[in-house]
Length: 521
Image (cartoon, rainbow, N blue to C red; front, side, top):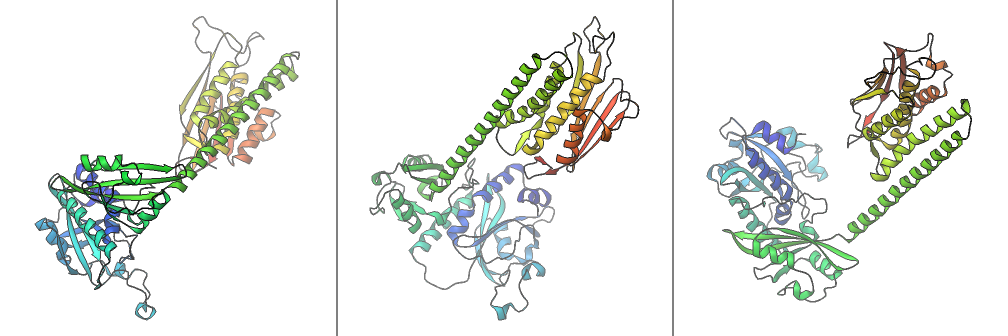
């Protein structure tokens, strides 16, 4: 399913500015649907048809009433002649209404309805006839689309709540028709944005409350307000009304959290009601977000705890690394000292992962930061006055935390192996051939790449290559044995080592990309 923006770009002549206006409308028109107790459709002319064809760019269902459209009509292209009420609104640029059918393909009209729906009592996917009310959508004076209200056919006397809601819908729809709603730069798409059903206050131009819905009264009661609210201002009830006052004076929407008591937090969204650019009142939506904020605080506390755990693990690993380094210094040069130094280096490579997680706790690790630290660690291990050049190309992005640790150890081993063994000693006392210009006497290249299914790492050097008959499956090297086991067991990948003008090591790791594009195995 394409997004409204993609549909508009593909099928309409809407400019970028007009499309941005429609995107804001789609982000805020939930209030229109709830106030009108109706399904809403956003319809625009199809490019190159001179208005003969129409496309549905958006659809929303009310939370205050049962939906009449059980199927999603977004993306449907219909003949304008089959939708005369909508065509009239587009051509005349005025509001229009009338009884009409919704012209959609038969397969869409039937949807998933059982053939014997009349016997089972199941309602049609799309009603045969509905009351359609069309509101033109203008941006900078240009007619760009039409909001179609699909209203139920009913003949009953509405109560006060319904009268207030529909009056507010009428006032907001007039603002849509002249281009005053939605407001420029206002973002209504936050997850905790209040809906009409959460609680509504209708405010007069002087700030007095004209009407409070039952759910709004419940929110006010939780804030400690037990008095009659109609005919009074929020400030008279002991509630900060700075946001509402600014909305009435400046004619722009304001969203603010009001904390009347430490244990009660209410989100207040104030929307001005305009008529010919004059503020004629305001609509205030209230939502009790106490539980949400409590969960936010718990998440922050948990985040801090996880960060602290990684910090302590990093510190403990660094302590172990220091102890191994001190112990190695007490030994005579030989295999024992070298073994401790290798163990210390492996511990340090694991500590690098926890160091990054202590700064950015989460399920993913920016592995490129670890690569840089591993390269510096390999370069620092060179004790000769000459140097080796290590170059990194490509990247792997973010990887899952449980992948980062074994992958860091593997990469540290491969880089260290290239530094120590790729370039044979000359004269028996140095692994490098010196030169007067200070240029690198050996080169190691680390190539990183990834796609949707695989993560590939290559470590190549221009050294002496592998010994004749080398087989990693039967190697006696502890470091390469660790690399082989981590790659094949924990990472589920494969490793190939070959002589190619030096040594080339290729790791191929199967990965999956999560929704936030992090790598996991």
